[in-house]
Image (tube, rainbow, N blue to C red; front, side, top):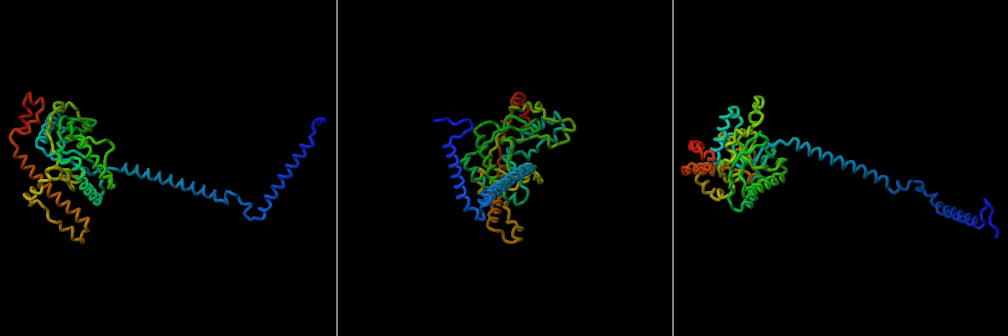
Length: 371
């Protein structure tokens, strides 16, 4: 058998190739011929199936969703940027022992620097801030009042019928711009933190902007430079810790949590120096005896506001809210009067825990406490 020469193709191989090509052409003709007469045969298959349209729609929707998300983020940032708290939940400090001790502290500082007198917080304003919030109109204030009233059973559940005693000892500061009496360490801290957290959640669930970026740190402010901005121009840029050095370990006394107020930061203060109060709740044992106290001081119970009915009958929800506010405010006035009378009957010598170690040595604070 002869081998094929150079450039020659084996006859059998050539026949096989031609045969395969012929079959391929016939198959293509048979397959495509029926489609030639079909009008849609020349249309792009992707377009015919709507794939291009779907991709375009999804792309547009994706852009819309991204824009919506971006708008939401911007609104959220703007909302928080514009967040300026103007209301707060206050735990008022009313114990004479505590307020008297703080006045001694303030006077000691003023004696060292008279300029700081204007930076002092008035004794009628002493309080612990439980929560700050922004309430921009009357409707939002009413929402805040409702949230405060809803908060009460949660607090009672946390305390489980026990008193929450808040002891104050020592001095602290925030950046040497704000000076405060510290809340002493102890078992009272956790319940107070729980109350602050449930308060924040209760108000936020109402849609109220509430809370601060920094964590809750209970304190009793007695001095802040922001009360007198002109001090900075006069060279007072910070509060020197040496001014209150003698009170670093001072025991100021104890306050029992019996009331929480919703107060305004901007409205005119009351005649006693305390903040304008929209509403309050009474906590603990004092509430259980409030009926007797209220009966004793029944003259303090306000009558139904005449203006409430002049514009038409209020609905049931409004009646309930107003009733709660009337009763709460009446009870608070009665309880406060009762506490004032009780404190005035304290035995001589009560409140000696206000003494500092230095006072034990020289008796200066004992002299001041008798004033």
